[in-house]
Length: 491
Figure 1: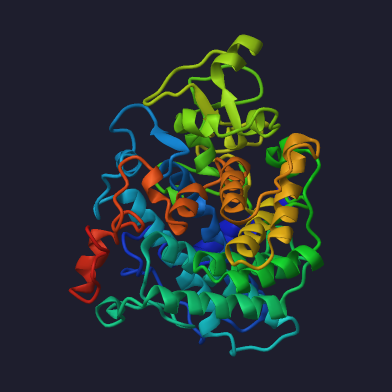
Figure 2: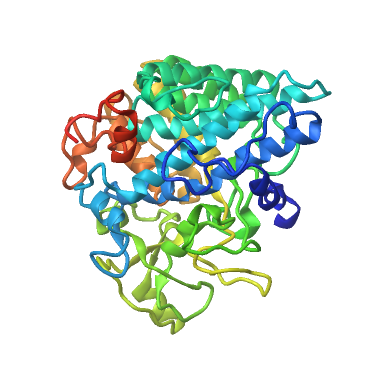
């Protein structure tokens, strides 16, 4: 049960590690008090609690996944009206600027995660105990995870290694190049691969497989196809993962942390949340935001009707693809079938992201139910690994036969037969892999970055080449840096 998972300790740990929990900047400029090597990191339990504090920021990545869809051609912003969460509306319309509170959240929260991981690593030699290398490896995995989010959203970022950011660093620490950020990510993940096993010490913690998958993804984002193919092929051949038989089961509670889950962000609905501190929620906020407005009916609960799928995304599914009804809820058909009633929000398309719709919950759910949904986020699934490997083998000109094999494993499950296998090669196979990533992973936050990294950003309405490949660094950070950091191009 989730009560026995890593989420159980987070509320306690957050009190101790109040590092930028509600800051307007990536550096905490007004800490309540300081914990350092004189009074902490003196026992295995201290390191463990510091690690849990670093894991805690994963729960804020709900906004990364939500906006990864809204920024793409998969979904529209939705909501109540044109001013409902204006930052979402601006990103959907590609008119966002450096003044955007939601982009600022991503910057702040991902840097908070980096800072917490660096906090532990700063004192990694303070105390020795059996198994410490596992905690250090997980901290490096988390630093790589947060830095990967930052570099794909904002490009080059300021880096500090095994040290926390401190007041004044923003004026002297330069923005590193994307290549330098990726070099640190690769180093951290290789350490994690070398020191972790495929079995996690607790559900929700990183494993050797998590690190291999993220390293393969980081290579793919840099067009390092040979390296990506090697690490992903090794994971596929030697890891414990496989596709579950029933695609529908993946996104239900019983399907959490299953054999297809390579890395999964854990959420719970027993720790309440409010709009006063969104990053304080232990629940998946994106789920309530994606819910059906004013819904009354079976299976689902109501939400705010953001992140509504486009007709283009719906039409991308081929006839006979069993994933369509799992990924997309056609609300008119559902209402006719079940007698459910609902309201319509802004940019209503008639469709909802069924994978992450809020389900009805038990009596122990706490706080604002729209902000405290227990649905885990499947950050990396084995199907994603197979498709990344297929892309690397194909685009790298390495082995189209192996690319077909991995692609067709995903397609055979999708159609429930082998009648729809892809036998093309070269650029036609590349397009088939791109298509498969869209329909397999729709609603999971990857689409915008898949389009941008493969030079297809122009498929997004309003996208300007040379500008919208990256998002702007928040204006406050540019001002605090006092000329030390340049803004991203065209912002």
